[in-house]
Each structure stands twice: as structure tokens, then as C-alpha cells.
Image (cartoon, rainbow, N blue to C red; front, side, top):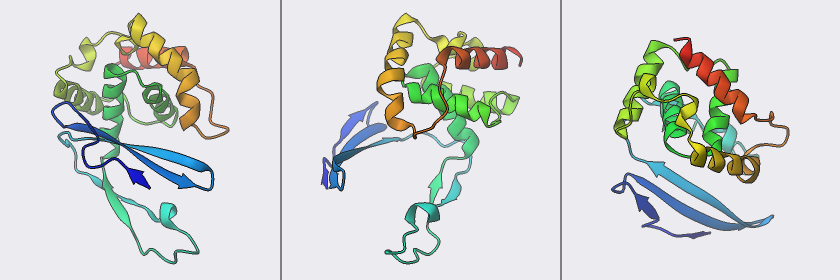
Length: 178
């Protein structure tokens, strides 16, 4: 494996970093981009079991491994903030899947959490944000490019199709109904 450590690419006063980790596998040269953000945690983290990722008859029993992760509701609020502040189509796809799965994305408690996440980047609270994730023509074009270029690379075969316009309309209705 070839890793460009320790510096990586640092942004926002080193509170956000990315590293490219390259390796060779049975499928040829591969790469993983590791991206981290250092932000205030607003809700207690949860422990997530890693057993399904590490279960392998050749490795033996890994015991009961786990890692700490953001509280699910906080992670959902981070997704909303991301959709308002960057042009990554995966954020919009993920929010659509969360809504489809019945995640709470509209309660007063959740909106408060989103407002706190937006405030970290000095953005207006959700009720003062423009509809459709405040997409202007440039951000919209970037997302449309991502629909064809970026989204297929991160979806599993057989993943549900994604309709950005329908997703935006669902969220406009959801947050207008509050």
C-alpha cells in the first residue's frame, strides 16, 4: 500500500483533511480516499459493532470489535448541512434514502440539531434557508454532472434509481409542513 501521510490535504484551519490511500488488489490498482472532519460533537457517540466487516474464516474469530461513531441523528443533521454547503450528489442521494427509510428529518429536535450544524459554518438556520437546499444554477449544474459521473461509482448494483427533482420536491414539502 502507498499512503501519502502524514500531511494529506488540509483545509479549514486543519479541521478537514483528506488522504489518498493507494493499494494493489486482485482487481489491479485501487484507491481509497480517507476524509475526516474535526467538529464539535453535539450528541453522545454510539458504539458500532464491526463484526460483519471483519468476519472471515481465514482470519478466525475477531472477538467483538467496535468503533465509536456519531449519533445517528447527528449524522443525519450533518448530511443536511452538507447538502446546503457543498455540491456532492451523494449527500442528496443519502438524504433521499434516509427519508425513504423513515428517518426523522423534520421534528423540532432534529431541526434544532441541523441549525446547530449550520451555525458551525456560520450559515443561517434551516427556516431561513432557501427552498431546494438553496441550489443556485451553478450548484445545480455541479450536482447534475455528479449524477452521471460520481453517483454510479458509489452505488451498489441494483440500487434504487435517483431523481434529484423528486427528492428536492419531497424535502420542500417536508420542511414547509413544519
